[in-house]
Image: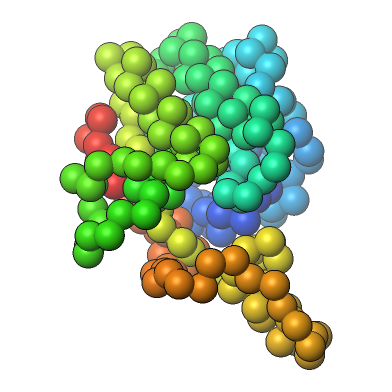
Length: 224
């Protein structure tokens, strides 16, 4: 049975991705700093920002495919050092570790973000739209993409830039769960950010299905 390594397996996207991969015939193993909370998975405890432990953890496994979800996903996160250490250096440590495996994975998907496009005023925003990040979160993701290009001759990397998506289990930091929670509690007031924007939301189940399809069929260096 092929092995799928999922970083961030305990996170919002990870808990939905695991059954999608299992149904496709993968054995799912996670990397993270806490025991697995997802049924049917094991986890190798590791801090991706620690280069040595990441190399050791990944080399225990030598996975067939990799889906890298681990990172700080909240754009308003106020610890800038942690943002860059996790999203950029953690990814670099993972890629280096994968090159040291006995066999190279047949697919490595890196989850970036459509936030890299900034306040683009074109419709639709697609892969040809120039990146124009407007916050540290977006810069960290775009920097991660550029760094990953240095590894394209060694690893079959695919980069995904998902737009907003939501679903069961998402943190109350995010817009739709926040609104639903306020409604459920009958809260008298709610504090929101910029209301003068249009947002498109996907279902997390759609996103993980696409991730699974990408690792099975996309080509090295593709950006989606």
